[in-house]
Length: 188
Image (cartoon, rainbow, N blue to C red):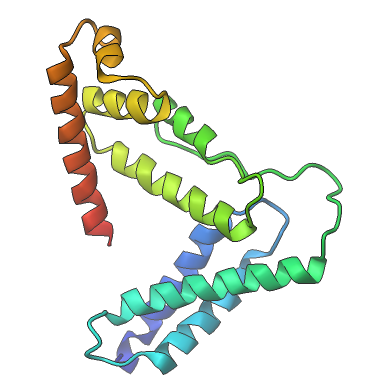
């Protein structure tokens, strides 16, 4: 990693911290604390990174930064103990680009027996899926949402979409998954 790239790496780490912070239940940690953890992860990534390992520095740093923030959240949880919350804590509502995605929003509810890290990971995944689904054509998106989030068969979906044949629904499904696969390939 070259020193002239360091300022952009710092910005990258701070943006990751901001994204992470937005999906945390409010009141658990301050954004600045999370940014500090991210910067510590960045420094650790810089010290550990070896060129020629097959991963770019940004990929390596992303994983280490995310890990440092999760470590920080775990340590905060241990420090605060198993305190009883003053009022019920729940994640902030997930802002999705379309009312259809309220189905996705319900799928991101805090895990029953999960940790805060799992809740954050789940909410980040839901945001990625919602963003990727926004690139899919309307009927294809409806097929994916109805099939995976409403647990409907292709025949049922065809009937709901105005008597479309099951084969057509299958084709919409396949096309949607191909678009989503490409979206996630670009992210990775």
